[in-house]
Length: 130
Image 1 (tube, rainbow, N blue to C red):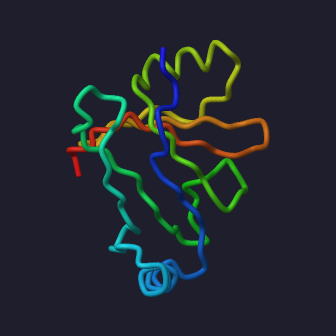
Image 2: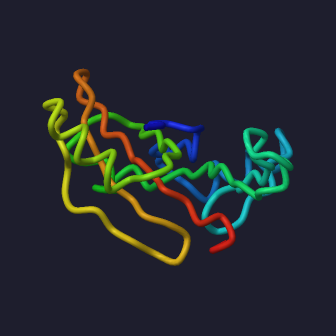
């Protein structure tokens, strides 16, 4: 079973998310919008390499509780192929699962904690949901 297939997103806290998005847009050319920046690409491990994919970059408010129970200022999102099965395997392996899996039009999400106290978001994407 495949586990992580790629990076789905990079999320971090900022004292002023609007200002930091504007700075990254102006100085580094990120295509920012209200949510951050989305980087579309094609999956290369597919036969024809035409399957659309997306990596998200998003600053969160410094007061956001979304990363809890982690006390870190960042959270990584990893793309996975079968979130339901992966969460079962991870639980069997003794990995701490955080909350309940959620499903949206753009995919399924689950959360785990690593040994350093970092909350990790696992995403089974539906890239066409964007």
